[in-house]
Length: 168
Image (cartoon, rainbow, N blue to C red; front, side, top):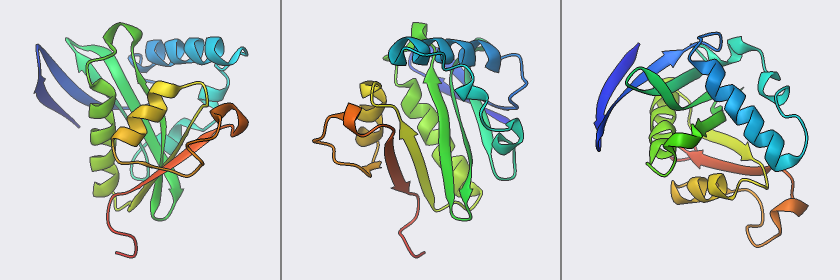
């Protein structure tokens, strides 16, 4: 299932894909390369830590934003618990950053998670990803850590967002 939307200056489509879709590989490779540079160790293995089935319906999803049929951004979620989806692998291709695509990916993932009955989203990002930290704070995610502390002293930075009021 996919939907198409107009974006400023471009036509974007949203594609729900599986991890073995050939369109996914270049973005995950670039993401692994970037994480490896930022953290000084090979991060490609981390990207395959979870079985691909965890990111497929009914409990998960992997989606891509396509421009002219080419992937420019994407992300996924998996079941964390009965009421919580965990966001993973949110990325924007390096040639397409600063266009609001990550916000669009988040909105699409939030909508799809709510449709599947999840009430809460959870995620972690690395301490050397200040742009991700800023994105999550700017889009209504609550930091589950001391935002005044040095991120390097915390490790993975956890966030949450309620899709519905708690207790509903």
